[in-house]
Image (cartoon, rainbow, N blue to C red; front, top):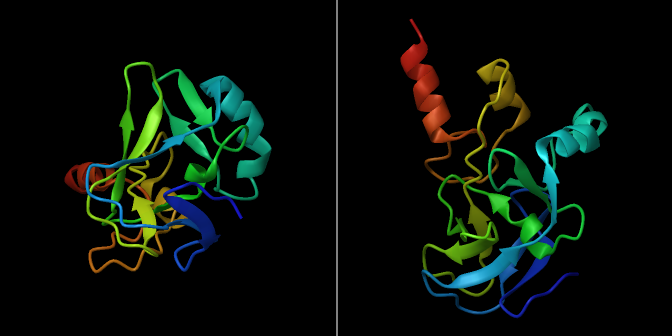
Amino acid sequence: MQRHHLCEVRRSVIHGWGVFALTRIPARARIIEYKGERISREEADRRYARKLAQTTHTFLFTIDEHTLLDGGRFGNLARYINHACEPNCESVQEADGRIFIEAITDIQPGAELTMDYHLQVADGDLETWRRDYPCRCGSPRCRGTLVSATTLSAAALERP
């Protein structure tokens, strides 16, 4: 089990493994840096082309239009933070491209750390993306998918 002074990895009811608070974490507190190998989009496509044929699960985090962090290589426990439509954490990017996870609400000991992945649909059918990236957060306002609310809203406006 991976452990950090504020949190640790455990089994999650949301999905597989999750990250849970070991102590009270106040809103706006910086919790952990999201670590991983910095790679190009082309390298990410190469690495995950075969894997994505079997599963949609990756540990990729976008830094900018050219660079991603691959938490599957040289990553830490931050890669296990699950998505939720009403999250208690968010990612914050520093000017140097480093990504940190910060609390957006007070988090009690034992609570699972979650963030909205804001998944963007690059190409293809939106309904396929919705199906392939389901949300299991259980929130009363769950949108049913990891696809971002703004993408869903834009798609709704485009419908005839």
